[in-house]
Picture 1 (cartoon, rainbow, N blue to C red):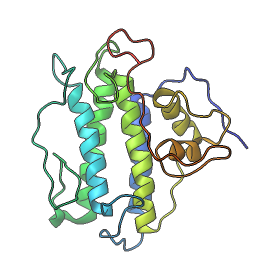
Picture 2: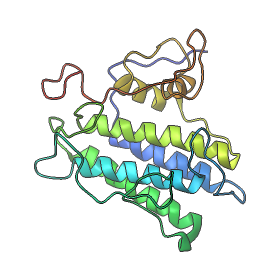
Picture 3: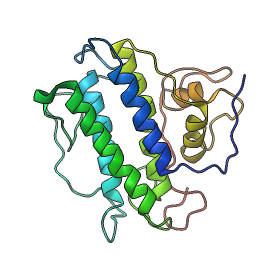
Picture 4: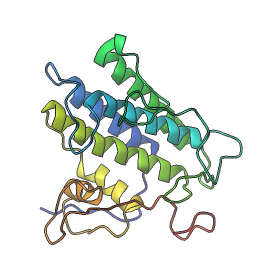
Length: 221
């Protein structure tokens, strides 16, 4: 059965909160996970990938946080890697607190983005390399980061993960306006982010989302 959504359905702070809650429940429910396992198609392990998700959520919140958000670059927090080939991040979890602490960091970062998405005026704009974005755009980017990277982590930990079609559909509608609309939403989101094929559409070797609002005089598409 195909899933469909009205293109006008927006991505909201509640979607960020839902994505975080679903991801935490899936990861926390895994039995004796191997956090050093490679996360899906990535070169990072599962721990690093959750840290990366946390870092993205924090960074998207920070872009919306200043009185005059940057339009030409990210807010200049120090960003570093902990090992060659590892993700460059500002946010790291203290490994002494174990997976529970890692998930606390992830939840806290998600809460920051949800709060900023809920309270920022819709006309606010801030830099992203794929298009100067509005609060909805940053919320949608956060949702995609969570859903797709939880898929990567789930592959490494050997757990099941299939987020709701409606949530995937809203993110697709905001960030991937040219994605097929007559295919199942979760496989289509994976396809749009270079993680598989859908009927009639070969796997992508290069991909990007469109973070600028449509017909936006500030960021433009």
